[in-house]
Length: 161
Ligand code: FES
Image (cartoon, rainbow, N blue to C red):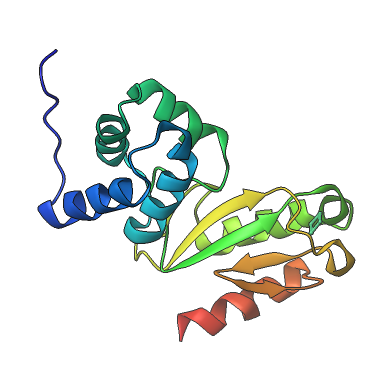
């Protein structure tokens, strides 16, 4: 089979190979390899998936299948401040959808998008384990409890300064 041409920086390629080495190129470690790769590179575009597939000797389709199955993997770059809206049951019944709509309106992007200045990206999650504080949103690692649509602008402004 012809060798795939992969457009990826040599630095990035070296990092990916080191990650695969650290897991002994074991096929069964695919999820852990992908997690590490996302931590290092920020996201998992097709080029990165191809390198990992070659290194672990698994079909690219399998890598793609895993990346698209788990919501914590992303194929697009995140913003500097990634926003996650919890749409789990507890948050949903307490108005998470209205919060999502307000964030979309304020940032003028849809879920899955990134603002043109690269400051924010927006995604939805299922239950983040803070149901007692519902509805919650996360910006990076920070959890905002009992959010209402009225609070959205104030929260976003903290990051716009
Ligand atoms: S449903 Fe949102 S934290 Fe559990």
